[in-house]
Length: 256
Image (cartoon, rainbow, N blue to C red; front, top):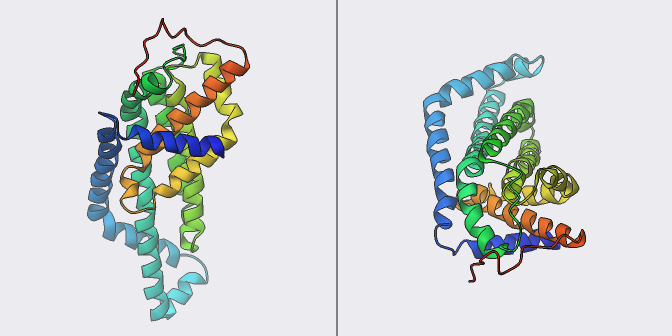
């Protein structure tokens, strides 16, 4: 838990650096515009489709057809569930934009200032980052589709969304945070060793997606937190294994 809090603290500190803050805002704004447009254009069709699907259920459909109150309550629940379902879609879109575009741009600057002594072993690549993000996004969407019935149970859909988003965060951002500094073996092993902590960090970030205004920067802030968490974990592991860091004279370090 201490390492997670440390990562959050360092991520907050990084927000004040030149060129970082802009990458926190644009992915979420773009995702909001895209999904709000989709919602406006398809809202009536989505609501009618989901209501018709519920009415096809045995017993439930008969109760809705026979009760005006039941039909009204069902319509309200469906509209609320659909509105809430758009939040994780906005988040995953923003998270993929962060993973593929924004985070690599922030990574070099943040790493140079805070982890300049770590040797660059380049076990990953931008292509690997893009592929990892696409696979993570597809698996996340499959999980969302499978969990759709839970949105009709108060609270259950939200829990499922947080769990899935926590997984998405650790899968997408864990690779990006290490791709420049870890070698291929470290890039495979370290996320396995840190998986529980990464899921906790990803879950904490997932909750930010439901905080008004904060959710606009939540995906990119989460990416920053993972950069600090994973690079600090890599630094500790190399020290424990007796692997020396780069000589300070050979790698210029930017000082704050």
